[in-house]
Length: 266
Image 1 (cartoon, rainbow, N blue to C red):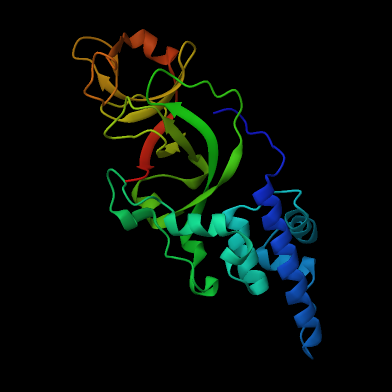
Image 2 (image 1 turned 120 degrees about the vertical axis):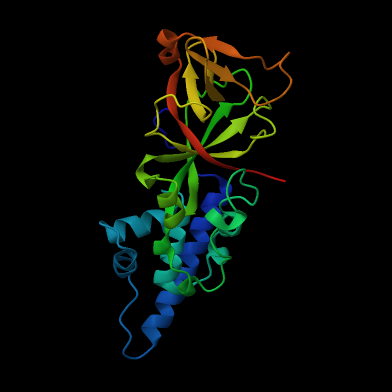
């Protein structure tokens, strides 16, 4: 996973920015018309959100210089007073689907925030917002991520992450590509990767980088004889056979992190 680069905002992201700006103007005008109410300036909104450069940050979101993410949307909704879906239907829908409903190893509710209704009723301090990248790890022959773009954020319950022994600062969300890890991981599944876990561990699934194959996601099995086996979960061993690496060669496949959760469509 290489360092992300910024790309121009999409038409949908620019539309989100305009809706945010329009709603803010209405709310600011309403505040101005109410006797005794303080003005709802961009600086005031940014301070309510807890941002270090309050006016500049709010302005960048409203003018479309920076794309809204889930964390910013929720904070702005609480600070200004609007429904997140009124500004970004896509991000708001993502909250309802957050965490995936078919985790292979955890109950469906373990990483899923409550549906958005009144943003004031949700304690978002209970959630960690993990950066979501468009990088892909091949559950197949390998994937070449020529560059990586930060797309969004996904929210996971802090209690659940503590239970997993995972620190939010070490986590990234990427995507699976291919069928070699089926039925454990399917094509286009979302993968939560802990980048602090880079030591080989028997039976665990890792995202790895190979000079010849690119980025892959595979299960590591400690060999009874010597070294490690890079194994696909797909039972079709003709197309997805094991790769055996002696102990001295395992680090030729640079381990990028361990997969601690996956989510995808039913």
